[in-house]
Length: 356
Image (cartoon, rainbow, N blue to C red; front, side, top):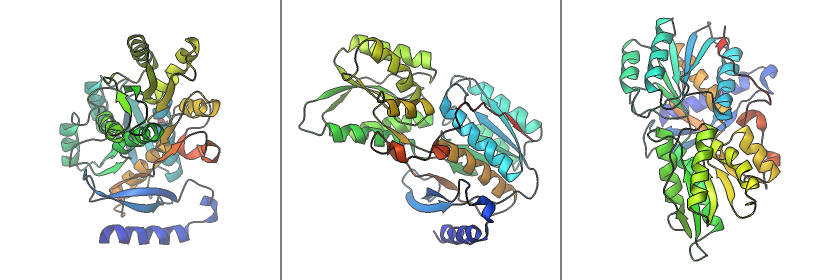
């Protein structure tokens, strides 16, 4: 805690020293650090996150994502690319094309390092499946930043992520408030994402914890890749087998894909949609009244922080080892007040795979 307090003081000093040119930038940003870092039961400590003004040299950073199939990872990609540009470092982004492609993700990262990467930022396909690779990279003195999804290895250098347990919990709590214990029970279809991914298991646990004492019956979870076609098929199956289902809750592609299906079947007002994380499609769905609500984890900021952490480690600067943006729920009551540049990529943004 003394180290964290010192870093927060240094952050405040650096904020005062920033030029006016950065006054309109993304920082300072309300965030939460975890102490001790990486602890499942760690204490959340409020911090105001401010990155370095510039890198001292053009460090070479490799970024690995599970895929770029949905707008969520597009948003993270926007964050890492823009922060690499702002700091003046090189960035190479690779994507494995799906949560079934763990071997490909490992191979891509190994190729990145062979090509000269000095730090690696990983959005992990598997919570445990990258641990041997992380150990190998650390033996080579290459910092590894865990972004978004979570990696179980204690040899990770830093984490830029939020608790998906909290994301799932907040979605569940939103429902529990609508259907408290003692009210009429409702059926909920639950679509947490690809089985085995750390973020999915965390969200699954958080959601079920939040609704445990409410008048909510959660149907058997339907796990599956976050491609919209996969999720749409899962939703169709649940609606077919459970005509009384009242809510569809799950990943952003689940909610996005289900909108058209609900309209086609004339189920508006009978079946409500919730996502447990935000994307442009979910945001638009809330605006248009097709999606009820979603927690926002500011994925763009998570990407930015991960790049800043990598640069700080390479330069021997102080850094917060485990930190992520504060989580808040977006619904029709507050959507007009949400800053889009923090939580979503710009409209029509195309992925940037290389920053020189």
